Each structure stands twice: as C-alpha cells, then as structure tokens.
Image (cartoon, rainbow, N blue to C red):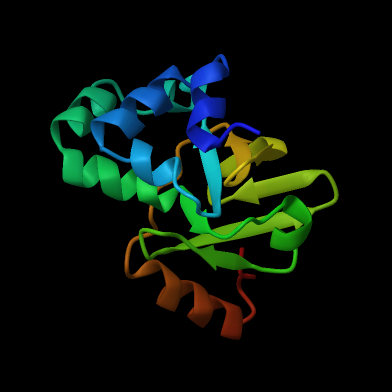
Length: 154
C-alpha cells in the first residue's frame, strides 16, 4: 500500500500541497512509519488563500512548516474515530476543532470532501480549505460564551 506522500504525489489536485511539503522538508517525516492522520488541502483550497500567500509561505519555511504540521494529527483516525471528539491535537501543538454529524464532516473552517483514504502509514482526509491555527484568545472567549449560553463549542 502506498504511503501518505506517494498518494499525494499520485493524486491529481495535490500539486501545491506536494510542493509545500517538499519545501518544508517534511517528505521523509510523512513517508515515515507514523501513523498520521492528514487533513490534506487540495489545490483549490490553496487557491482560496489571499493572492501572494503561497509565495510568501514558500519564502518563510518556518511558518510554512508550522501551518503544514497543523494539518497533521498523530495516529490513524478515520471519520468514525474522530466523531468521538470535539477537537484533536495537531502535530503543531494547537487543537483542531471537529464537527461530525451524519454526512457533515468539518475541521475548523474546512469541509472534508473525501474521508478515510487509507495509506500505509495513516489516513488522509481531503479538505476544501487550508486550516489555520486559532488565535490564543479564541478559546477563553468561546468557553465564556458557552457558560453564558451564548454559544456552543465547535
């Protein structure tokens, strides 16, 4: 069975992701034993970023690496596994919000458009938007609103 990188390289629509993973020197890591769960943005997802963002990130490898690592979770987690959680911790260190109900499968601000792609070293979930870390002040405000009955956690 191919690994996560082999699948991304062989699948149409992941050329930007593959370029970014190579630039960030993450190929060997993502070809490693893992296991990893990867929320993989398509080329169309990267195209939604403001103009010039990709070029800027390719010139700022530490920031690119951080963003890419935010799309990776340790372990082999299928949709059914993830449905048990409201959030999971990324390799980057920040939480990724989950909303899974019936056919709806969302991570932060992205919709999973294809779930549970099996790789030798993990699982790939294809997403329609690049996900970004929440600012440090997000969670305390959300928790406060929940206590007041003004919001529910994602």
